[in-house]
Image 1 (cartoon, rainbow, N blue to C red):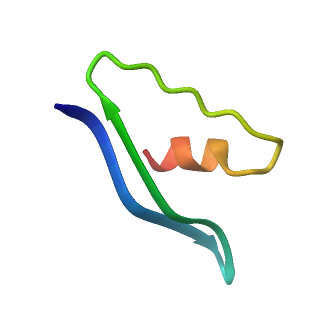
Image 2 (cartoon, rainbow, N blue to C red; image 1 turned 180 degrees about the vertical axis):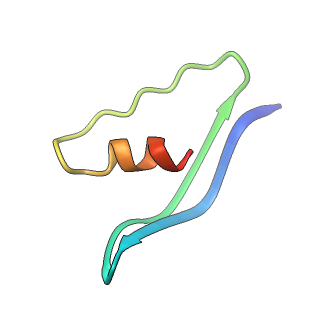
Length: 49
């Protein structure tokens, strides 16, 4: 059973699309780590969840 499921999640600030068609499934008792360079959208994704 999935604890978190995101399907086709997108985010834009004005006309600037920063996240596009994000799909993510995190199962119960599973760990997930977001890794990437500064400004790639990690914090934006976490705030949306």
